[in-house]
Length: 319
Picture 1 (cartoon, helix red, strand yellow):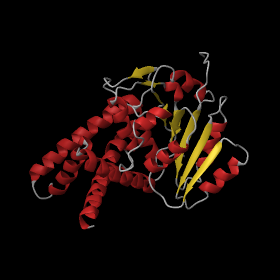
Picture 2 (cartoon, rainbow, N blue to C red):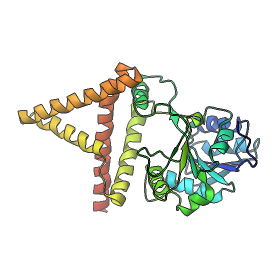
Picture 3 (cartoon, rainbow, N blue to C red):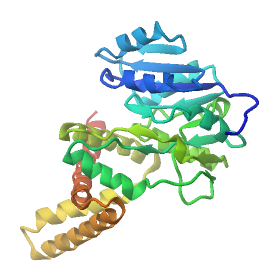
Picture 4 (tube, helix red, strand yellow):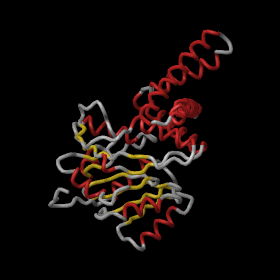
């Protein structure tokens, strides 16, 4: 490990709303570090469960934990910004309440990585799947997030990654998270980060656990959140995700195939495309059942997202 003359003060910021089942595990993974963060700021954004009580109990044993309470819920962007405003460290590191660090030398490695760059990218991995729904999502993980070596990512890189930690002064200069954007506020900040010519370091050693929805109800809820997020991005950027357009045509062709055989042929062609995608995922994940299931699960998600976008649009028009 490289000797660092001055260890940066890292402020961990965790937005939390009704996270009583996971917040303690998240905090323990931070407190279990060989080199602990300078402070841990939990922004309790309108929780109606025991999230705040659990954090307060842990605060009595660990003074570096800080709690900011809001009676009403807002958004992840709001909570993260309020946490960053209260931070006193040199670096801000954003973590979700349902995520856990895997290595005990996480912050030692992060301190090394921050030398000479503007931010650090931390890849995630899902836990071992417990059911078919998680298995399908895990198969897709291996389609997009295969391990990489440590490398620099600049504005000219064709691969952009969300920056999880950056120098606090830079975060402030960039204007923080855009609170008018829901769910995809980190992607918006990423665009501004790279667009201003900043450089980040991607380090596979800084992997953390990120849970997928365990039940279909949670999957639908997350998909609706994505729909709200896509709508806020549409209002701001006027773009349409290609995947959504594909699944819109898929759904329409499936419905109209009962009316005209031409749409039945189109529906068959699009199913062929879905199967090809599933087979490509299978080659990387080595899980045939999970890969094929996710190919269609992605369609279910996209259709839910489309309906949520439409619902948000109609809500704005009617109000």
